[in-house]
Image (cartoon, rainbow, N blue to C red):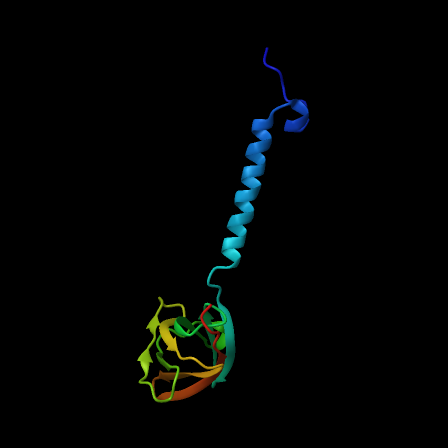
Amino acid sequence: MPSRPTGRTPFERGSLRGARRSRWFAAFYAMALAACGQADQAGTIGTRQWGPYEVTVETRPSPPRVGQNEVVIVIAGEHREPVYDALVTVRAQTSSPWIQAIEDGHVGVYRRAVRFGSGAQNVLQVQLKRGEDSTILEFPIVVQAQP
């Protein structure tokens, strides 16, 4: 009859294979968590009101770095309903042309890769158009130098 585990640890039972497997799993899990924690995390730059709409801007990575960064614009209307029929354009410098953000489904999320220049302060301009209404919102951004 095979012996049943007695509830003792692998070390107490004399099984180092189980203990090695447990340590390997714990180390792998810790590395995976660390890698996920250092991934290009999103960070909210700010939220502004435009009439009945709430406009939130995020960047990936956060803080943004010199060069290409993803900018995500989330527009919510009354009762936090997504606004998915707006025309959203962005630029990181007033001398740059406006570039259209791409709608990410019918969930009120718009995305665009934006190139940020060097310098500690930049202002991201977000131009919104919906029907006859339009506005330009400004979001100050601190850009981090490349590591």
